[in-house]
Length: 248
Ligand code: PEP
Image (cartoon, rainbow, N blue to C red; front, side, top):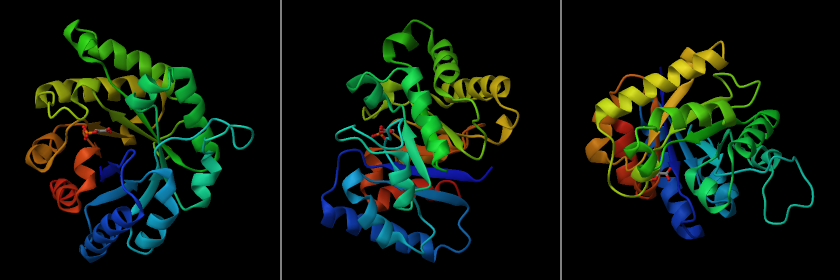
């Protein structure tokens, strides 16, 4: 399966930095002869328009980091999925653990956001993953089962849905699960998706959590790992590009 390398810039980058980073990545991707991977940038909402202009024509994809479940209305500070589509986004991240933790987003809310993304013609990158306590208690697979059942909306297909397995304890910590642990969870996610969707074998399942150039090749070669969702290392063009190159 063609891999997807997605960069989640989170709440980082002022305009100048963001444009420079996007320009660098756009040039690298455009110059790559028949790239073996899709490259996606998810800047903060303030920069989506500017980044979209910079990467136009390069083949790099554009995404949002979150969307509201409603298409418009009285929701101060929120962004609707059609607004992201209007700016040229093809993807939106929903249910990131930072949204689940900091904004109290439960599975039902995540499913509603993903459904809103689908209605707007966007692919939803639905994030799931266990906390450290849940892993230590032996509940990692059960947590993923529960989150998949609750967060993946009806109507999800391989074309409009990407799953990102992001163990919460690996995000921004420099720690990663072993390749064997990643393989076990991704195999489990694939099997669970098969119960929910007819084309589950084509759904891309990304791994996220402290992916960096030094561990990308190993993580990306794990069966059922169809790409990466990258936070910190996506803020440096050289590092993000090195991660993407690990898929070639
Ligand atoms: C993320 O927040 O999606 C992420 C994976 O972060 P990091 O790569 O910094 O661990």
